[in-house]
Image (cartoon, rainbow, N blue to C red):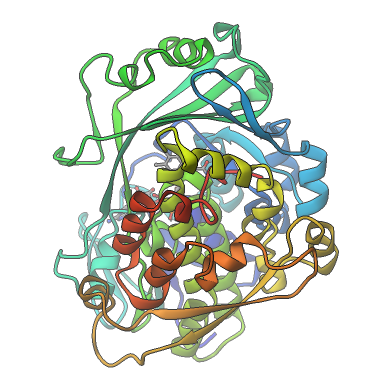
Length: 496
Ligand SMILES: Cc1cc2nc3c(=O)[nH]c(=O)nc-3n(C[C@H](O)[C@H](O)[C@H](O)COP(=O)(O)OP(=O)(O)OC[C@H]3O[C@@H](n4cnc5c(N)ncnc54)[C@H](O)[C@@H]3O)c2cc1C
């Protein structure tokens, strides 16, 4: 490699995974982390086959499996009467179909697994980055300076590197979804009314949903309760102390398992759920974005960390194989931009689909969910190490249930000097047009294909992808056209 080294800003899942993948290829990276100890915020995290595949490639599969709990299946329920709306095949099916397991684990355990594998020598804790220069100089609040051939901004949803890359002068801020979440870890025995405690489940209802999955061998249940509101997020950070009972009121009259779970532990702070607008340009000079810094998304597909891991695999691949850094970064961006944008949009749309009021929209959503296991193949079956897409074997297994799509991207505008942020805000060009060709059988075009093509009520969401407006347009689609939200989104959420 022609550059003098790599500095990674942020020791989250994305930054640490990248450092490990680079080391595997003989490239040493220095990781700068603002925290003085590695202690991921948040309760638990779920990794899908698309992320687990990469950690296995790093030789971490055994330890990861020991730390993780595989849910028995995915169940969507009506939140009020508890009726199972849709149930996927079991964990063995998931593993066999997508080539790796799905698992939930403590966030801190995942971060320590990655940091432990890397070792302390190249992780610089207490190093808050405050400035960057074109020549690859990185300045920390402590006064320390680093010089690198490549600087990677893996510094999360509130990224300072992103602001530098898009030259946003603070205008390119995270977008508040109008929803907020409460999280908790509950001993399973405190939820006696919970059916199928080993499953990952969504309890859906008007204006709210509850997601939970088992960790620690099923002894603990991790939940995320999401509610509509507050309409505006006014707290200075992304967490605030909500009034007592704020997490319970939207679930009044719901199934006893729901209220039992929410009441079993003290109310957590309220998390505002934020995303980032899709970016066309992920790098400036030799400074490049990765993970949430590039494409923070809502958590309803459980994909933020998984997408960061996929990014890391592609960036390591491009950097290791190239002496032309600028070209490597362009190829990285080209390989990641549409995929992450699709998952971002799908996650945004899922938010609305999970909270639909009773009516025809919910009936259509529920019918769609019956095929969710197959329709999620485009997320979970993605083999980033194999260059994207599913392996032929995996694809043929899934094909019978809805077909797979091959995604092709045709840029419809040139670079033209306009910053990505500007283009998103103006709703103008600079966005990519997505075209989809079904590559396997399975009885015609899949929902996902239709979603991306713009058929079947997806016009608004499609235009969000094609014509600019990014997440703002997706928001309109998700909120105003219930069914348009379903094909890419509905409760597809985290898992199978
Ligand atoms: C409620 C909720 C549930 C979720 N559940 C899931 C899930 O089940 N599965 C999943 O895949 N994803 C999930 N996500 C998303 C996931 O948490 C993120 O997408 C993922 O952590 C992003 O990884 P990252 O490495 O890009 O950023 P982060 O994990 O945010 O790491 C960024 C790091 O950069 C450091 N940093 C920031 N600024 C600076 C600076 N100036 N200098 C130095 N260091 C800095 C931070 O301290 C941090 O350690 C969830 C998110 C939420 C909100």
